[in-house]
Length: 212
Image 1 (cartoon, rainbow, N blue to C red):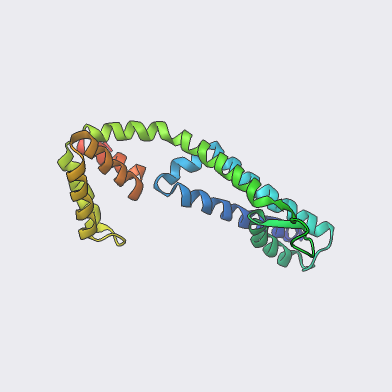
Image 2: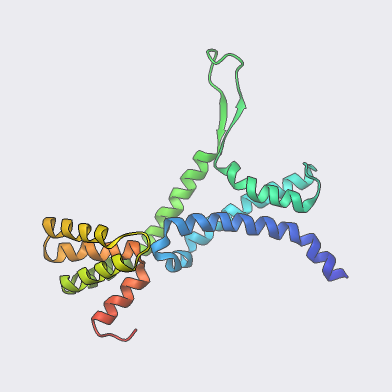
């Protein structure tokens, strides 16, 4: 019974942590969707998600201390877990003059502070990824242009979001504007962005005859 009571007491806290982590994780996945695995291995991703969780968890603890409604800890956990991340992205007016002509509102822009922190972590994660991505693109540029063009064309036929005609138009524009390694660079970076780092790495190794 003691263990069950411990689980019940910890449950709301775990709910808050889970919801806050999922929200922050969604932002990382959305930003670095072409290289998710390596982005999540960066310590900066851990810092971003951890800071997000700590802020929302602090709101929940404060709500429990102040006995804010709803008094049910599970309902409060869900409310804070969903509303806390929204609050992070909001601008709060601490003082609003009755007459707008008298002066401006005194505001606390959590959105600005959070945006700065978000951009800092995003830039650090990107710097963590960029060196290996550059090396992979350099390897892709050594491949025959025809092979990369074939992979881009196959992507157009396999994709549910882009039609073969759309991809063919993209390839035509590249042929008109670029030659040789420069065209190979654009096609390799396109595959990396659309299909992902791991896919491009596997394709390069396969085309070079290296073991997967």
